[in-house]
Amino acid sequence: MGISVGIIMGSQSDWPTLRKAAELLDELGVAYESKIVSAHRTPDRLWDYGRSAASRGLQVIIAGAGGAAHLPGMMASKTRIPVLGVPIETKSLGGLDSLYSIVQMPRGFPVGTMAIGAAGAANAGLMAAGILALHDAALAARLDAWRDALSASIPEEPVDD
Ligand code: RP5
Image 1 (cartoon, helix red, strand yellow):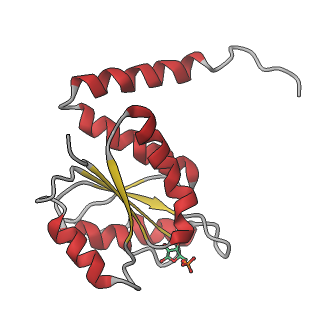
Image 2: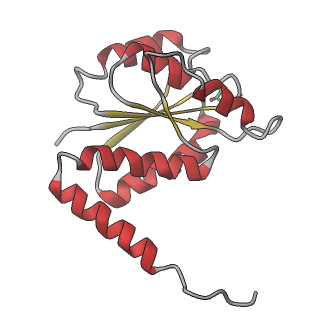
């Protein structure tokens, strides 16, 4: 099967966060690509990526950006493929700037916005897998097993440090 998930990010500096999505997809056996696509620094690359995403067979796009985080929203404007936005945690404003830049899309062009930072990236990977699992029974079984294993790893009682 071809690549079904595109992980895109505004900068190399976003990769340590977006890698959390990639790691989840690796664990679940989902094929993905990862690319640097900046709304501000490489707008033509963004345009080309959005224009060709559906015809290339992508089914979900995970887009992470920080600060003036326009990448997820602009990508949602260029393709009907579901876009999951990951707000990158920033030094100056803790990622609230990224969150606000991504979450308030106008009616008609939605972005499924995740939590700020690593947890949001990991959840984007899981949600992408969940979307693909709707039409992939083997992946659905792997995702169910992953979720069961996480639940089983949680102790019933706390322990002292
Ligand atoms: C955004 O600017 C990127 O998504 C990144 O989070 C932020 C800072 O980029 P660098 O200056 O680290 O390349 O476009």
